[in-house]
Length: 65
Image (cartoon, rainbow, N blue to C red; front, side):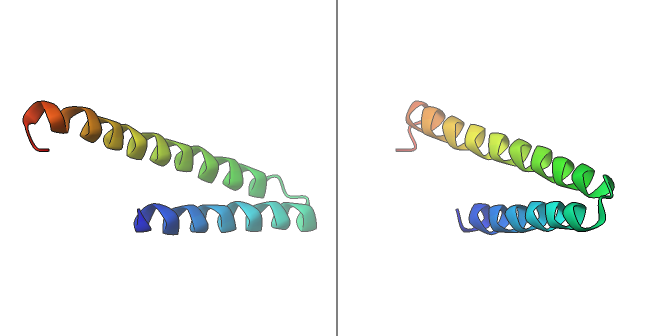
């Protein structure tokens, strides 16, 4: 969970910095960077939550609890 929090803080700061850079320069490249980072962050969250769900479902079946 610590890794998740660190990654989300880095993602939020990267997206914020990219949006600020866009507002100052009007260069759409920075919006693309923000969108790409957000997309991969959502993918990371989806994978992490899927693994947590599978652990929760499969642990009792395998007798690990």
